[in-house]
Amino acid sequence: MGFIRNLLRNREKSQLEEAILKDPSPSAYLRLARMYQEEGDLTRAAQIAKRGAAKFPEHAEMGSAGADLGRLDREAECKRLRERIENYPNPRLYSRLAELLRASGEVDEARNVVDRGLRNYPDYGGLHYVLGQMASDAGEQEEAVKQLQLAVDQDEYNYAALKLLGQTYAQLGRHGEAAETYTRILAFAPDDADVKALRGDALAASGGAEASRQVSPSMDTKVMSTQEAAAGIAVEKARAESAAAPDKETRVRPAGAAVEGDLTPAIGELAASAGIEGAVLVDNYGLPVASDLPGGMEEALAAAMATGLRRSAGPACGEMGLGSFDEIVVESTEGSIYVYALREMTLAVFAERGAKAGMVERCVQGFAEKALEQH
Amino acid sequence: MKEILSRLCRIPGVTGVLMVSSDGLLIAGETSLSDRAAEEAASAVVGNLGKSVTGTLERLGRGKIKNLVVSGAGGRAAMARAGDSFVVALLEGESNLGLIQLELGAAANEAARNISL
Image (cartoon, rainbow over all chains, first blue to last red; front, side, top):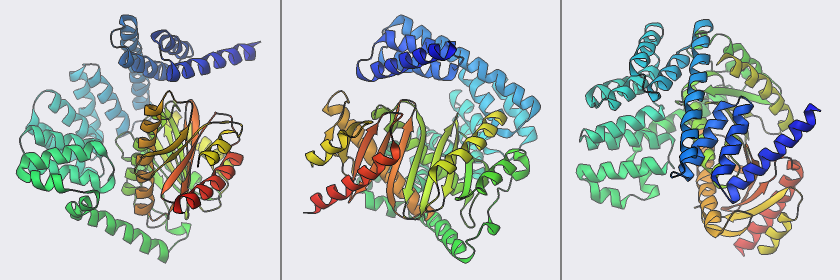
């Protein structure tokens, strides 16, 4: 009889999801959050409760449920991450754990975790990003700039670090540098409305108000010409190399492949599947975790683009009433791109023109199980 | 245009349809979203998503966008290019995506012809 109970439960969940979209009420949010909690999906339970608390800020029970579930979710995730670090350490686990501890107010413990992480992985920018966040929280803006600069030196496409660096420059009154930093983001996320607005403010504050007012979408490109040129060169280089060596023998493997241990062969296996040209797994900062890409495709650029697609698709899901983002499939004249949410990570798969969508999905499922198990 | 959208809405599994310009403005809509403001908000994010996808394809040298499907925990949306605009079909989770994409492609071509007249 278990399947009938599951059927009824799933039906009730669908009805509650629909009720939240069409006629939201605190009771619908609370019931749905509790259902996910009972199923052990604390992350989704906390997300629902958080949305409910944002929608009904005056509702006391909603607010406390949001806080309680958020705390439980963080604790469970911290426990999972500590176990993973113990058995299969990698730098992203340290930064994710430190970030969760920081969010819970356990700043000293967060710093210990970052220190341990940096001893083992001194070149991982994500750990410097967390240090930058903590310095910013403490009002130590100069230290924040130093750490965030280290983070973006390690990865020029680190969206979160660049954005916080720009905001920190602005707080220090270094508006010119803030505008330059935002411009670096717009080179790979040209439609980011938030960053465009921040850049406009920074330009205005740095005395470029006239220029800011006159910036049109086409002029945006001119203003960020250096970064655009860099991105353009990368794309052109990739195209040229692809044209010269389009087969899978010249695949790009990540420089830090050895660090990734188990996932490198798994992503290689995925990329070698019929119809698939390559794939990249990206962490929540937009940094590559593992990749196996077609010859000439730049790993960091592919990771930044995958993150950008997820960032754009997330709000679209919300506004269209589709719930939280799961995946996006883009079919183009040259093939397809599949982008999946794997918890906080993002997987992008590049498929040939005419690849069978069902086969791609099956191959991705196998990889997703491994990736989620290991991270 | 209204007739094209109504025809799409009658396909089993389709819960609503939007026609959105490339700059995110609502051209026409027939959805179960709460009101016109909700349809306009959805159109704005569709326009933004279209731009983001177009930019990504360009930077990665992956050609021009033909169509896309976005899936969330509570349903899916299929989008097809209609000239400079997009036709978007909102779908139930268990709908026949292959059939809907065929119909959506045909509707998008027809809509593009109508717009260019």
